[in-house]
Image 1: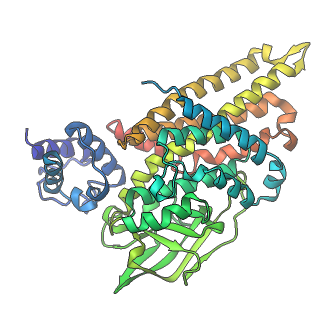
Image 2 (image 1 turned 90 degrees about the horizontal axis):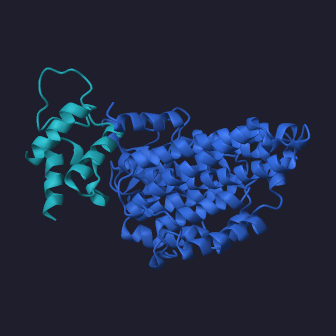
Image 3 (image 1 turned 45 degrees about the horizontal axis):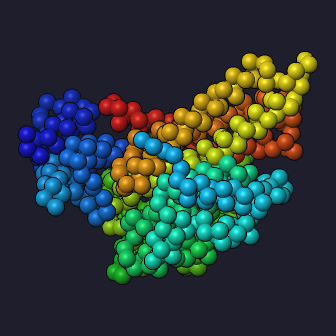
Amino acid sequence: MSTKEIVREFISHEMLHDSRETPINDEDQLIESGIIDSLGIMTLLVFLEEKFSLQISGDDLIPENFGSINTISDLIDRQLRR
Amino acid sequence: MDFTFTSEQRELRKAVIDFARRELNPGVIDRDRIGIFPRELWEKCAKQRILALPFPVNLGGDGFDFVTTVSVFQALGYASKDSGLIHALASQVICGIQILLFGNESQKASLLPELSSGRLIYAQAITEPGSGSDAFAMRTNAIKEDDKYILNGSKTMISNGPVADRAIVYAMTDPRKKALGGTSCFLVSKGNPGFTTGKPMEKMGLRTLENGELIFTDCQIPLTSLIGREGQGMIIFNEVMEWERTLIPACLLGELERVLEECVKYAKERIAFGQPIGNFQAISHKVAIMKMNLELGRLALYNVAHLKNQRKRAALESSVAKLFISESLKQACLDAVQIHGGYGYMTEFEVERELRDSIVSTIYSGTSEMQANILARLAGL
């Protein structure tokens, strides 16, 4: 699975608390729509760091990096390339 | 994992225990009665370098690792009966960790030396009159205008607030966004026009810790007051809470250890029906639960301390430590009063103060209910 697929699957299965019929899109705004909230960001960070064996800290911990499946995947790919 | 203290940690703890018993405990009943922050004892603690422990040497600190810092604060909680003062010290260190993690190089260089020396007192300001557990329903806002932010709003029940020289303040910077992305973190200094502090609020326990209001009325602060990036406030808050929910429970675990020892001593000395009351299971089982919780709490505490020492994420582990240790301490203090009987209710025996001090531990730094919410979410609900 690609990074994007892993992120999409986690958010679709673990963070969506409504029974939406349309699947979540990669560019959907996760924070503005309330899919990622204060507790949600903790859950997501725990998942990402465990799944990809990395640590996200400092300047990478900005809301823009968690705004959509695309930005989260980009962040992970950047971290994995370091 | 091996949580055994190193010889250096054992020596530090012994020195801190001797210091606290000698310097911090005399007069604590009177200080609690009056409800005043003991600044001279704060300064003695600062001279002992307690506030400098985890900060790099080149930034005015002593460069100890976080596990050592936690072990020293556990020792302080154990030896010092002045829990309010210990909470004030821990609050200062947590502000410093926040600056260390998210401040820029200039902020670290200018702020951490004054913080770790104890010369200036810091407070962290999140809670508002209308937002406690839902911290990010906050109404304090910071509007950017040219080369400054204009801060308006108020914070309440802020630890160290009435005596603070500087405050780390959370405010909404973009109300159109959700709290995650719309909140930022600022440093505001005493004397800044538009920034005032209220009188200490009277409270049930931790009476030597001063809590009060911070009021911002068209308070202009420079852009360089921003800690981290604009919009990063909630993420900074979440990160800092992991450290806070490790350091504060260290103090609480030390208190639990002291309460247990006091109960064992009393249960051996107090005779009823011709024998020490410790012989009765009604007493000994209470003591057994305290001992069990102390041992489990120690594992929970040093598990999270080691994770944070490696800068690893510990949302789950810090909530476990905070929830378990604070609830264990509160129950232990209730049982301690019961074990001491009528004497437990008397000020002179100091058990009633332990109980009053412990009550708020399941409220501050995220209530037990909020810790349970975090754990439920991390469990998959």
